[in-house]
Length: 494
Ligand SMILES: Nc1nc2c(c(=O)[nH]1)N[C@H]1C(S)=C(S)[C@@H](COP(=O)(O)O)O[C@H]1N2
Ligand SMILES: [Mo]
Image (cartoon, rainbow, N blue to C red; front, side):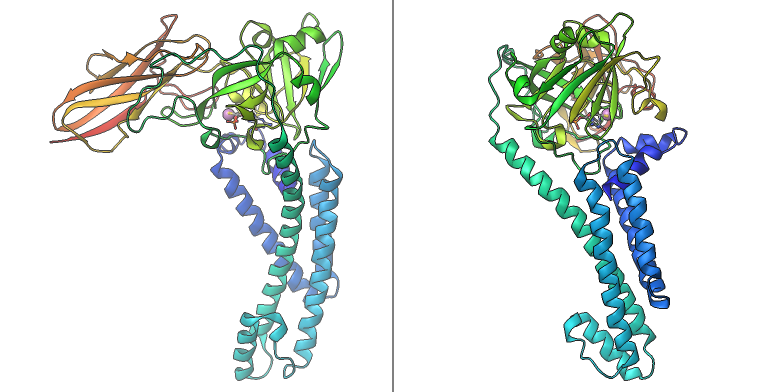
C-alpha cells in the first residue's frame, strides 16, 4: 500500500504544482493514506459483490489489484523481496477469505432457517435475527455479509502489510538502540552564556528530537539495517567509493549545531529546527573520490529513491556539511534518516538534507534533476534570512505595561546581525539579540515594549551580518522559500 502511495506521489504530474506543494506537508500524507484505504475498501466491497454474482469474479478483482500493487512496488527504487512478496501474500489471503465468506454466505442463503450465527459474532447474530423476523429472502442480511466479507478482506490485506513493515522496523529500532556512537574528534563549540532566552512560551534553543519537524515523501519510514548499509560515491569522480557504516564511524567525526529549515516553512511557521549533529564532513569523502572538473552538483539519493541536488561548491567549501549519524547525542531517529543523512548549513532541506542516504552522484545541474525540481521548485535553494515572533502568542491577550516579545531569527552560514520590531508600522526598535551558537544556527532575541490597552500589529525584521535585511515582500513558499515579515496581532488588556 505504501508502494502504491509512493508511486502515486511520484506520478503526480509536474504541472499539478499545488499538489506537489501540499505533499511537502505532513497532514496531506494522512489524507493520501485515508484516500487509499477508502479505495481499497471500495475495491474489496466490489470484489465481494461480483464474487457473489459470479464465482471467481471477485477473486479476479483482487488479482488485478494485487498486480497493480506489484507494478507499484517494482517501479519503486527500493525493491526488496519483502516488498514483492507483500502483494502476493495479501492477495492470497484476500482471495481465500473471500471464497470462504462467500461459501458461508451461499450456504446461508440456501437454508435461511439453519445456523445460529454464533460463529460470526454478536453483530451478525443480531442482523440475522432482525431479518428472520421479516421472513422470506433476506437481502439486508446478504448486503450486511457482503460488507462484512469486504471488511474482513481489507483488514487481512492491511494487517499483512502493516505486520511486514512493523517487523522490519522493530528489528532496526533494536539495532539503533544497541548502537554506541563514537565521540567527536572535533567537538561542537560550547553554547555561549545567554544564548537561550528564557521567556515563557519560547521554543528551546536546541530542538529535542521528538519535537523536531519531519518532512519527507516517505509514507512508511524506511528501516535500513546499519549492518548492511553502504554509501556509494558515483558519477564524475576519479575513484568510485563504497563506504560502510563501520568505516564511516571509524572516521574522525565532527559535531556541530546546525539549524535546518524546510522550503515550505511559511513566514512565522514551525518547519525549522536546531540540533547538534554528529558526522563526517562530506568534503572529506568527496576529496577521496576526486570530483572531475566540470561537475557542479551532487545528486544525493535515499534508499526510497528520493533525490536532492546540492551545489558541489557548497559540499566542498569550508562549511560543515555532514554525513550525519547522530542527532542531539543519539543515533538519528528513524524518521530523521537513520542510519545516515546529509545536513548542509545554509540550504533548505529539499536540496540538501537527504535522509536514509545511499548514494552521492557527482554530476551537473545540466544533466541531472532532483526530485522536487520538475514539481515546481527551484533547482537551488539557499535558506532565506528570516525571523519569527514566538512570544506573545498571536491573538493571546496580554496585560498593559511593558509587554515582552521574544523569538528567533536565522541567516544560516552568514549569521544574524540585528533584529528589530515595529508596532503599527512605526519606527523599527532594536531587540536584544542573544549570542548565537554559530553562524549556522538560529539566534534568539527579546524586547520589552510599553503598550497601553488596545489592538496592535507587531512585525519583526532580521538583518544578517553582511548588513542584508530580510526581504519585506510577501512571497509564497514556492518556488524557493517564503519571504515577508512575520506579523502578529496583539490584544492588550487594561
Ligand atoms: N529521503 C528523503 N530525504 C529528505 C526528504 C525526503 O522527502 N526524502 N525531504 C527533505 C526535506 S524537504 C526536508 S525539509 C528535510 C526535513 O528533515 P527532517 O524531517 O529531519 O526535519 O528532509 C529532507 N530529506
Ligand atoms: Mo522541505
